[in-house]
Amino acid sequence: MVFKQDISKVLKLLLIGVCFIAVCVIMLVYVADHYHDTGAPTTKLLRYKDFSISILIIGIILFLAMTITYVIRLLRKTPVLTIDGDGISEHSTIASVGFVPWSEIKSISVQRFGIQTFIMVDAKNIKKLISKLPGYKQIFIKTTMRLGFPPIAINMNSVREKPGEVLAVMNKYRDEWKKINESFETGTAQQHKR
Image 1 (cartoon, rainbow, N blue to C red):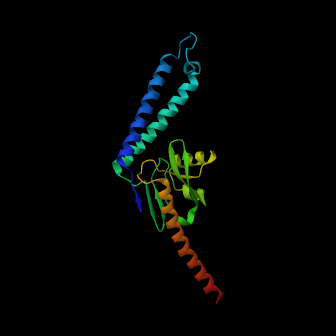
Image 2 (cartoon, rainbow, N blue to C red):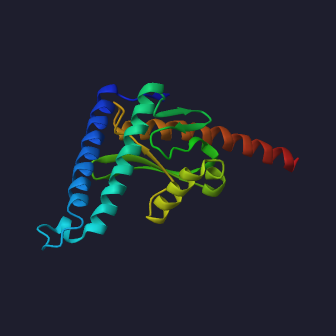
Image 3 (cartoon, rainbow, N blue to C red):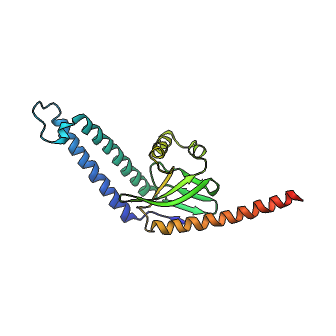
């Protein structure tokens, strides 16, 4: 089953990303313009200039990365999530891991963080799973794991279907995979006893 992005939702997210980038740039220019003022700072933003500049630059980088990701996905028309009998293939974030077989999935759940809703996938052997990914994806995934999040977070904000519906489909395919493999393992064990 393929879950494609909803163009109207992606365009809305792009607009939000561009707005946040614009706000960060405007604030950065304001702080940088007043950086060498020797008078008393008039705002907290100016009181902590170095910290403000660092945070604004990080904000610009993150929102730019998000915006670029959505533009690329919009142009490529890459499905956000594909679910089949072998596993899942996810391409929802800049740190997407791609294909994950059912045999490597430990647990699946839905979690909400602010306005973002994610399907969280915990892998059995994350080192093996991310070892084939580019370095920036590995760093991103390791950082989110240190913050207490599972290694795979599938962003569902750009699809029409509700996360609970997608989770139900994932569990259905995973249960079918388990039944097939349990019956295969049971049959193999019985042959070895003979």
